[in-house]
Image (tube, rainbow, N blue to C red; front, side):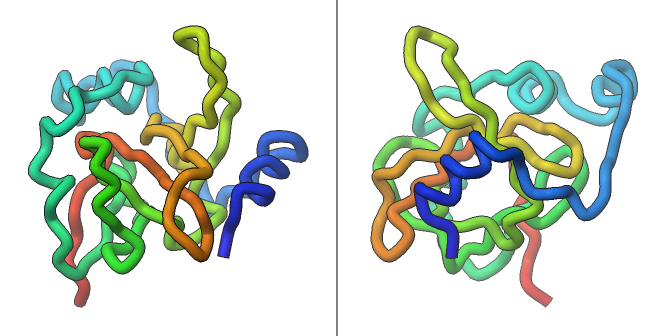
Length: 149
């Protein structure tokens, strides 16, 4: 189970090695993503808080990267943070997430990206529930829900 110290170590020591890579040109991403998903995932955008019903959905299943379909989060790690974005305590596989120091907008945060295709997902914070204390605050437009088999 990852905790805040693990996240800080990734920032300082380097991200886990991705199991594989998906790389496309800007034109290729634009051809397969709608405008909002492109803006959020490829241009580091953010959707308005409480703009997605995904915040209040807690059915079993997994959440994959909208760009490359890599499973990133499981519904068992999802919780209602009250922030207006889907929130999770852990990724499915630590190597599927990359962590980047983000000093935009006059604050220091840790951005999370899909480690497979570099899609911007959101940010991670150390104010989540026990036992990990992590809150992955993720743009719903960066995720697609996939059902358990």
